[in-house]
Image 1 (cartoon, rainbow, N blue to C red):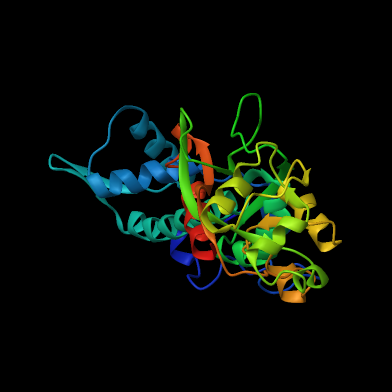
Image 2: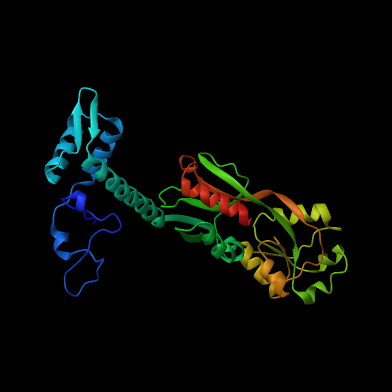
Length: 311
């Protein structure tokens, strides 16, 4: 608590109080004073308002009367032209401004420190793109805690969920939702180094199994139509997401179609290689999605800016 002396003229301006009780530091607040009633914060706020406006009425007037009764001082001089601070009122105004400013600053800091963003994203995106950037993201968002959960679904649905936002792959068109585009999906064949040695031309891919991360097989069909040679192989393995699909490629079970952004660590370590440099940019991209009413939320605006910086 802030100790405001009953005798304002004797209050040292450089520190709150001096504690003469044995066993306590000189600048410690006297424990006996902690039980004394102090003026209300609302009373001090009313006092500052009247000091600025030079007039008062109703409930505010009663707040000022209570302050004057508390201090047993006339804080204002009343005249036909309004209310003006007395010398004692001038001194209290300086103290009250400082106290209220510090309380307001702490309130804003505490509020920011308590902010949490609840974010859901696909498992592969979480493992291969988001988590490696999480430390950098937290540095860009001091005081905001990000709680994440994962799902294999790319369908943004907030029904019955306590979520602030989702990271999903799609076309960005979802009714009632606001979508911020982060980066486009780009795909290219990936396989283990041993298999890559057998792939001298794109036609050589016909002799190997193609690994899919979607049951529709649209991704491989799109790449093959653009860059492939001959008929697409008839040997296929289909997984429910990109993570197990590229994992199977690492183990030598076939050729997966992956996004270099999401396979960066595996490509850097050499357990996956790109036998060809052809990248196809899909119609799909990765988006930060939130309910439309949340698009102006300060914490989500900060998250959007930070993710775009790291994308």
